[in-house]
Image (cartoon, rainbow, N blue to C red; front, side):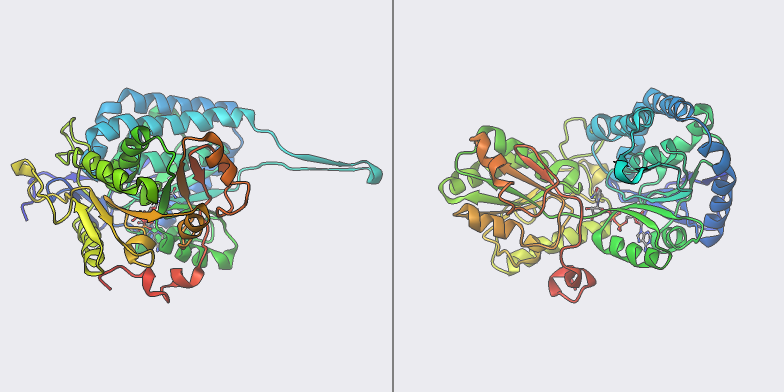
Length: 475
Ligand code: NAD
């Protein structure tokens, strides 16, 4: 493999200073397959230094007024926004996503996250219960909890990292954050702006490295009482187990296998392009991506034909190509894993209608070794198949037929994940009325077409791997 001569070398950011690490990991450009960056391979020692810095910074930061913290966070948002293009270019190169997606989704959302919590901290209210007959009143006080350990995944790197840093520091906590070892560059770029924004040393510490080494050192540290994690369900379960002995406060945002349910009265002109986008945006590497499409029998054939035609219009290309709809997948290993799901489905008797194994990729010469894959549509796949049961987290979606509402509710709910679902029906009432019947997995909120569920473990045995469906198709 060709290794460029001058590599970008990242350093940890601890106590307001960039600090070199004793060992480093290679980070790849997914669109070329070349190493372009070296990332600290931090462990207990680096995490200990970050905890010490965060501990020292806590008294002063937590006693600042919400207004002061808000001003500083807005300044950081402004600074990132001023360099939006540089951040977007870096995110696209590091993750493989298209420059268009990074410019219009990732970086604007990172800016928005900081502004959102900078604003919300000014308007916090709390609950109060009066018990007049006993002459007492209960009230809730919100106080900073201490050092927050924040761990984020590779699919939306700065977007999800700021979604954790912003609420934590807005509320007066200090933080140790660890982005994914595969996508660390934009977090490192943000560190360069912290001092200018007015964030005191030690309030935001970033420690780079792998989950088993740096991540576990954060999760198991006795002086880190709060953990906020976004990532896979299995890692979330591990973090829950590691945190349990110390009763840490946990926030877990995990995986999904999200159904779209398309009733016969759906407006297909609107539904089809939207469902293609919800299946394949960001290479299908979004936790909310649609991956199981249930279509009512009366429109099944028309839907399938039009859905495949629309999918074939999606251009897979160099992430820097502004006309590309999809870039490269995150890594060689992930690409192989996603392709194995397609092979497994085929071996089980499913039909691949377009994409992997059907058409060929057309890529520029410099991208020939990149981790690209065409958006792939699978049909005639059984509900028990691993493609219908497991989160693939790539550009693969399954389309299946259903007859009745009762049947589709049962099938859509027949997986171990929660997260999100979409319902398409021209009659407004159809989508809304279905929720109060209580048949969908307890949804917290419902709009006409999208139901979000907070992530929950629905079947712990499956998650522990005792169920064969919880393994990758290769295993
Ligand atoms: P992952 O679980 O492999 O890794 C996520 C993060 O956890 C990384 O920073 C990783 O280094 C770290 N980590 C790994 N093992 C760890 C351990 N033992 N202890 C502590 N930290 C550890 O997930 P991923 O592959 O990076 O991301 C993809 C997953 O994230 C998908 O399942 C996707 O659905 C999920 N996700 C969920 C949401 C959501 O909001 N629900 C959003 C985005 C992604």
